[in-house]
Length: 92
Image 1 (cartoon, one colour):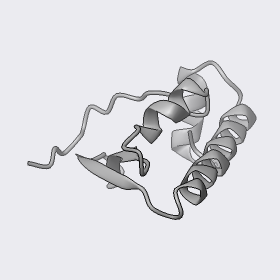
Image 2 (cartoon, rainbow, N blue to C red):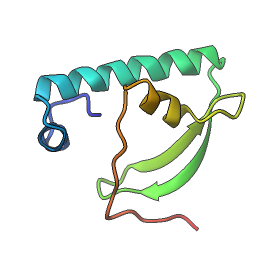
Image 3 (cartoon, rainbow, N blue to C red):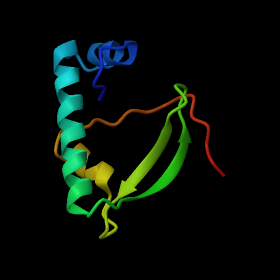
């Protein structure tokens, strides 16, 4: 989810049938939850790079110190949603 009111947030709101305020709120919750997880892992997380999206952002799978998938935890908790990117540059 997005935290600022930018075009991607409006797109996510439309695609998920949510208000822009709800998208921003979910983005803030996700950010807070991720900060808690990082703090609980003493500041260390591990990641596997999946590539770069069309907005030139690095897409990763995050893991905690017990090698548990943080992305899955955030999705299961409802803090994040799965998005499929069509213009993904895969790292080899």
